[in-house]
Image 1 (cartoon, rainbow, N blue to C red):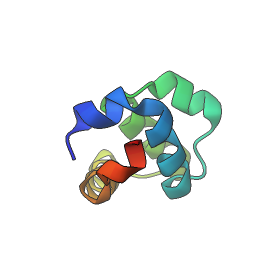
Image 2: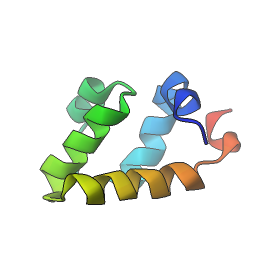
Image 3: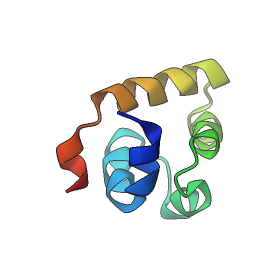
Image 4: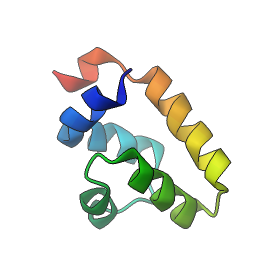
Length: 71
């Protein structure tokens, strides 16, 4: 799925992301506000991952994102 779609449907995406990354807080999601770069940084911070590992997790999540999550 294209990141622009995720960013444009941020409220719905947040719920699905909370399922994946439960350590991220509502405040984290407010800061991220749909920006992929910010999401990467917060995942690194909360989970103690390298940038590459955080990016891989986001890529995996993004590839599994489905259109019906955003309706």
